[in-house]
Length: 199
Image 1 (tube, rainbow, N blue to C red):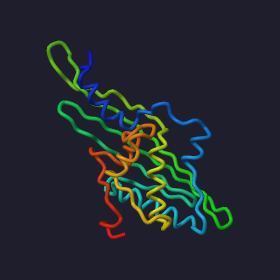
Image 2: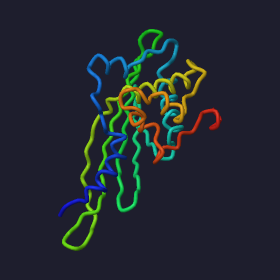
Image 3: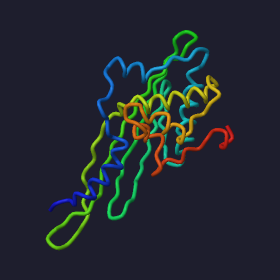
C-alpha cells in the first residue's frame, strides 16, 4: 500500500504552512519573542483582549478554556483539496502575571496536523490517514503579529495589521508568510478587523 507522492507533496506543502519550522529560534530569541510586559494594564484586560484577538481571526472555530491567570484557545480545522484533505488543531496558551503596575504576558502556539491521502491497493485507489504529528511554532513572525494585534486591542497602538499587510510585512522574516499561517491563511482563517467588527 503506497501513497501517491504527488498528493503528499501538495498536501504537506499546504499543511507545512503551519508546521515548517525553518531553523527556528534559540532560547534567548524565544524569550524575547514570546514575552511582553504591559504597564498600567490589568490581567483581565489582557485576557479579554487576547480572546477578542482570536475571535477576530476566526471566531466561529475557536474554543476557549479560561483560568485565573491564563487562557487556552484551540481551533479545529480541515482543508479540502481534489482527492485529498488535511486536518488539525491549533492551540494557543497565554499566561499572565501581575507585577506591580505591570502585567507580564507569555504566549506559545502549537499545531497538530494529519493528512487524508489516496493510496493504491492493487488496481484500486482508497484513502488513508497519515496520522497526526505535532510541533510548537518556532517562527518569530507569528508572535510578532500576535503582539501587534494585542497592542492595538489594549490601546497601545492605533494600527491594526490585517493579513494582507502582515503577509507582505513578514515575507522576509524567518518562516516568511507561511510562518503566520495560524493567524493568516487563505484556506481557513476569516481575518475580521476590529473596525469592521464594531470594536
